[in-house]
Image (cartoon, rainbow, N blue to C red):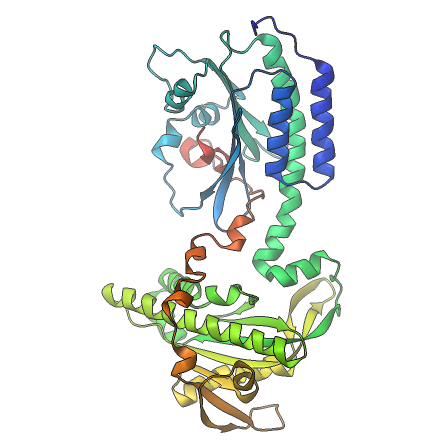
Length: 454
């Protein structure tokens, strides 16, 4: 078929546009929308070989999210990690997207001449795939050119894209932008709640627990951890170096408490509170306490590895304290009428905080209450009995023995491989405001959406 004279059915295009609206209103995720969109365009007769779309997003670990659809192969998804560097990748600087954005263009079309040198590196890949024509675009979401998506269409039709196919692509592009914006922004609240509140608390807020006083009393194994000598470190290392050290500390010690039923509920200065919700009977309390103890073993191992690395860099050890407890906590919203926080409160939280503080008195990194030790099992050594401020009865303080601190190879490997990409990192269907700077520095003004390169 000669695509330069091929007809494009407006009826089928309208069907694709209608499907986009339905999918977006139904709350479908971005990958589903893009995959379904590309397959439907191909089924409608548009001679597409490859479609690439890239979006900026609001996520602590990623700058942009890219989707590539290939005919007969479906969609692949790639997250472009935030590097923290100001320089742009050299491949990006040689990409059609950079050319578009640097020259304030909406579209760029190039015939793919297999005999001529490639104008952009991506054309080498397209030649291998048999492409004959390429059309790149920038599509704003309305706020500014830096907020939206960039993308490209490629075909392997002998005559390239005909005018009526280009017209169809430009027409459907706006419908895709609307659906994509709804999907991306629809996930923004989810991501921010999961990132800042944690999975359990985020889901509770999304389910409607948004008023002051909303919440419930739950039973949980509690973990309170804190970095030692943070004031000295801050004064010695300076602001940025101290922040980097604190993030190293949290990466090492806190990560294990955010999986296997645990959740970091809040970061408090240079420490954190983690909870392992459980039922009120003995068995679920045992499961929660043992899961928390397993996380302690992982955290201890990771801190040893971090301090070994710091030694090689000529830096001092990071010391820490961990308190362990089991009790009933109030889980819900408190604060001002128009400024709330969602966290755990109650006497058990106060007790685990006091326990953590006792690691200084006993010069031990980890201590636990008798309640926690009973549910956890294993070997424990009694350190003493303490009258905690605000608590009527004395609390027995125990030190975990070797059977509770020893980590075997299988347990050490369990979960460690997942740290390269955590559950939070998988939630990538999000939107990120692009950075904007004066036009005098075009390179710095290139939006994060263009990191997909293709």
